[in-house]
Length: 386
Image: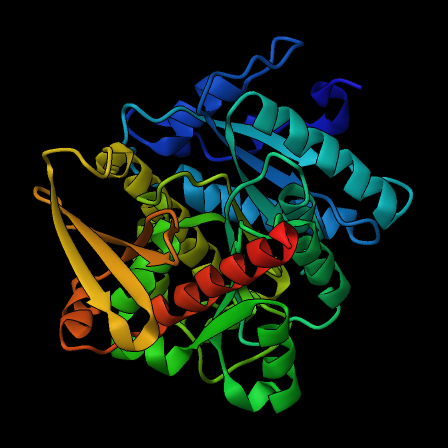
């Protein structure tokens, strides 16, 4: 089935004409989105996509209308970015039917090397994890949520098991609040190879998150991670949480990442956002993500041995590993690799502080998890050889 049969297009006539004035995102999006009976994607095109909820179709349309209205009205500072609004995936007779239609639509977007921004009422990992379970997927998943997800734990385990032993791709939850999570939930997350950053740690130094988002390939945002006074629209009210300025900065980090493949927002309800403050907040997160894409440098495509890179080698005899650090001379961004028993990992993003700690003979938490993984590789390879 063709994508055009799976989606209902946006009716741009329902929006105020001012949103499509020259210089606004709405003008660019409308020009690229008005269908002539077929959908012809361009390579690396941003594609906005809503997902109609089975039992709340009209409410879903209202939710996405509000989000689109806020997005279209922002000014376009990204002349080289191509942005299309594909409309909403049609609701099936059941949630399973809708998921099948969504997965077909996403696969069509990915086949054309485009990047979807997914809007959904339902808070679910399913759509992101379906992408991660594809054989050609090679990246990390980051999920913003105040609570460590439990309902889809089996899917996370399946994703984790489908990875090759040497991949060690990471699943991370950002914006957690401990009083919403049992100690067992943190232990389960760790046992599945995941990790987390709480609101307090992010707020103390948001730069800690930049390397994680620089290596991210799929990011999902449940707006429950945000403070309700700052970003209303959730079905729950939270006095604490991440705020819009923090989220905008982290969306910019993700836009600057090596190879972003999808961005998703879940859980927004217009009925809980009479002021449209929440819709405006989410729209500005999307805008900052686009700004990151527009501002991306090509430093991560440089060969590690290129002249534009500074190189530092630090033997850590106490831990039985050697650390290799590189820094781009212009952007001053850092990466590291771990060598253990003559096996070296791929380069992973880090901060200058990780390098400086290593010079003192200490290992940061970021580096430690990769050292553990590299040792696991050696153990695994030894078992195979024997």
